[in-house]
Image (cartoon, rainbow, N blue to C red; front, side, top):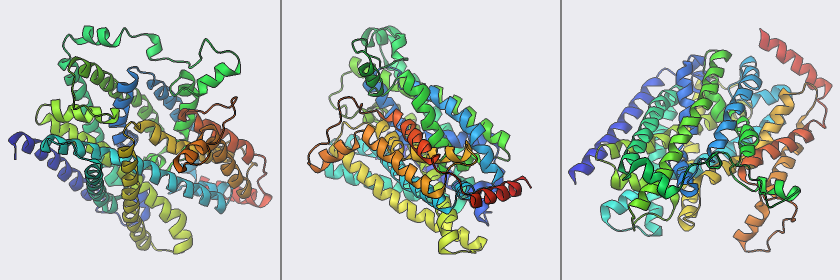
Length: 542
């Protein structure tokens, strides 16, 4: 084996050993579902902050965001990060207090207290399906590194079948390693390993940015000469075409991915959906000792998004400049793979191993949080009420661990399917895929939670389910889903009316929320449920 390659492999193995050791050690005293799911609510706020960053910075971000910078060669994607700060402030003051007041393990228990069991079941099911698809879809991304490493070592590009097997093998390895410490360590293992993984991810990205800049001959002057001078429009875009007028002009705004309106409206609702109604994100906020420290970790994670997104976009833009100055005939066709190609072929030995560890850190960090949240939601929302009512702490702890194992298997299936689709369609971009999956359903979740938290007497089980269906249907139409499905199955394409825009993904949750909320508040909460709410509110104050 080449000595330089052995050093990189040694760095990777050291990372895996440390992560698994810490994960298993942190969770060795778990003896109840509360310990497994919430860590006894004793986690420091700064560790929760790091966990939030690690959870939302997946391998999709590590490759997908540089891919956006490489493709667009601007910073318009950063507009979405502006909205995430506003969204987190709203989440911290609308959602967190009710969750603490009702002492929930699964946030969907709040809907039982406010509306009834049917609303909880519908929301929990939507979360589990969406989270499974979204996390599985971005899980395969870490395997890109191994597929390109195979090409570098063998000197031959793998064919589609070989690439698929590499992706499958890497996915299984990542899931097994992550599932080991997540299954036995619970949320404490997740958060403390997230702290390490977030540090590795951010550190490796900054190192990569510095090395890229130093590798460009001529530095800043070369960047400006090849890319062109930077202007305000490279950060702020409205999507309003001066050549259009009236509704046609506004329609163009909805059909543009990254605009300031998408950032200050669409991204706000995306963030409220992912950070207010997603068990994956909220669960780690609830591990903080109190509301104040939970809010602090959430808001600061939003502020951290700006420099993180800026760093990864800059990597993508500098990659484009670098390969303009150093043409490479072996450069992958997919912009998602460009950063990994640079890591493998241009990074110094040792640092290359650290960057590869950063890739796996992002994948394992987001995967561990998803597995823990899925298992907790299943156990609290389905196992305890239906499969084993009156379960003891030991039985619930055993159930949540087995649920982690089975969700790991499902993750492998979803990731493998996604890998196949991306291999067949190499020009597919990661960010729209991952965020698009959330877009179809999280508007429905957010609309129902809004009906519960922003009103006192509106909404009931039957109305909420109808509202969630209405929200999904509207988003499906606005996103052009019927037409896309028709193309896949080779049937007659759905004709979108000329006046109706095919909206880009940042707007989906906004319109899904709006429709769901308006339909839900048409129904009045029953007197019986209102009486239950009063009893529950009084009990939560004690």
